[in-house]
Length: 154
Length: 146
Image 1 (cartoon, helix red, strand yellow):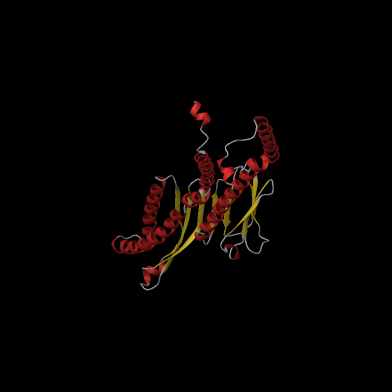
Image 2 (tube, chains in turn purple, cyan):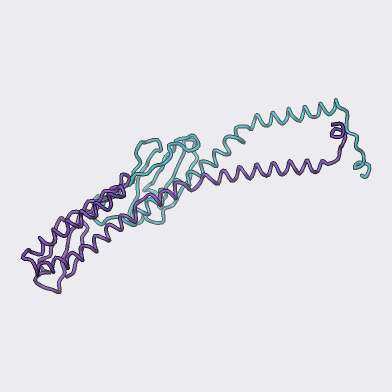
C-alpha cells in the first residue's frame, strides 16, 4: 500500500484508461440511438397486404378466363346454358378462395354481379364480359372492387 | 524545461484543496444551468427527429402501396398504428392539399417538425387530411366514386 501511494509514475496509463472509457460510453450512446429508427417504416411494408390483394384480382381474372372455356365445353356435353354452367363454376371458385384466405385470417368474398356471355356461345370469335365484386378484409385493411370488369375470350 | 519534467513536487495541500473546490463548484454550476439542455432536450430532439422520419416514411410507404393497388371502381381503407407519443409529446400528421409539392408534415406539441415527400402521387390523386396521434383510429381511405 505504501508503494501504491508513493509511486508517482504511470499517469499516461491512467489517462489512456479514462480516454478509452469515455470513447466507449460515447459509442454506446450512438449505437442506442441508431437502434430505435426504422421500425415503423419497415413494418408498414410487411403488414400492408399488397401482394394478397394483387393475387386475388389477378387470380380472379385468370380463373374467369378459364371458367369461360369450361362453361363452353360443358355447354356442349350437358343441356344447361353457358350462364348457368358459369354460375356453378364461379360458386365453386368463390368457396375455394374463401376457404384458402380464411386459413390466413383474411376474409375474401367474391360475387358475380353481371355477365355478358351470350355472344360467346353463338360467335366463336367475339369475347364476353364478366362483372365480379371482390372484397378483401384482414381487420386492418379493407379492399372492395365493385365491380372488377373482366374481359373473357372463348 | 528539463527542470519542469524532472521536478515531482506539487503545490501545498491547502492550495490544492482550494483549487479543486473552486473547479468542482464551477463545474457544478455549469452543469446545473445546462443540465436540461444536455441531458433532456438534446436526446429528446434526436428521438423526435428519428421517430418522425420513421413514421413519415411509414405513411409514405403505405400511401404508395395503396396507390399501386387502387381498384378502378371501389374502395380501399387501411388502418395503421402509430405511437401516441414521441419523446413524451403528442403530435399531428398533416397531408396538406394546398402545398404544391405534396408532403407529409409531422409536428409535435413543442414545435419540432419534419416533412416527408411522397414520390409525386399527389399529381394524379390528391391526398388530404390531418390526424392527431392521440386519436383512437388512424385510417387512410380511398373511394373511386367520390
